[in-house]
Length: 291
Ligand SMILES: Nc1ncnc2c1ncn2[C@@H]1O[C@H](COP(=O)(O)OP(=O)(O)OP(=O)(O)O)[C@@H](O)[C@H]1O
Ligand SMILES: [Mg+2]
Image (tube, rainbow, N blue to C red):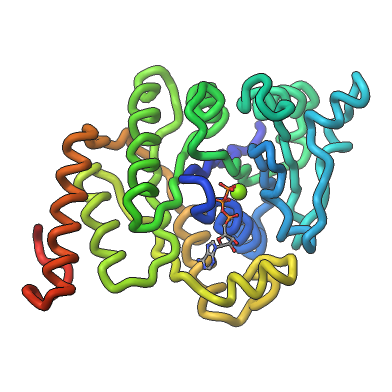
């Protein structure tokens, strides 16, 4: 019998740290001895860059445009520690659906039984997060992924994007769609950031998988074209990514979240705004007070 493959999708607002987090997660999972495929779903096709020393790979859609018959192996490239790297690619800018690359690539792999042949343990889809079109929902809707995680900072627009994702998950949750594993809290720096994220996950009935600090080690590693796991394996930041990987490897039960209505979300954000202002003016002293 074919072994169960854990299929994970990572979502989040543009530029929030999806590809950085996903690549470090893949690297840390591979260190645990798991066979991992990282599948970039962004037309920018830069997801797997730091797993390959800053080198870009041809996308599945571009390769298919050049020749009609493509063997799956032609679009799978080796990355750090044997990670299989794939970039689905996208349509020409302004034309077609961003989800097509994902569907086409997954179909190609399924037809050629690649997931089984490579005996993968985990496939991680690094999905573009803030495109308001059907393509955005493809890995959730089509049953491509099983567990969804969202990368979010404590900034309102990032939480807003996560809340929209929760609406999408909820919509397909009764028809076999992917469910939510939790939030990966990224770029934690300000003392109140953790409190804001904690409050948001409590309100939406989900959980924080890991708090990832904003770190110059990540910046340095990226400039070297590497993940932090590869470039700074002894660093505290690498340990945080390993901790995230261990939790995701052990994760089995995802759930439908409870997104906030937009008016509720605005009121919630407004209360945090008032609280942070009061904190700044010295009117309140302790952080994390119930608001
Ligand atoms: N924890 C962190 N500490 C420091 N820098 C970070 C951290 N997380 C992400 N970054 C930086 O933020 C920038 C954007 O990250 P990344 O490309 O991973 O975002 P993304 O969500 O994949 O973006 P896009 O939506 O464009 O695909 C990168 O330069 C990355 O190095
Ligand atoms: Mg990205």
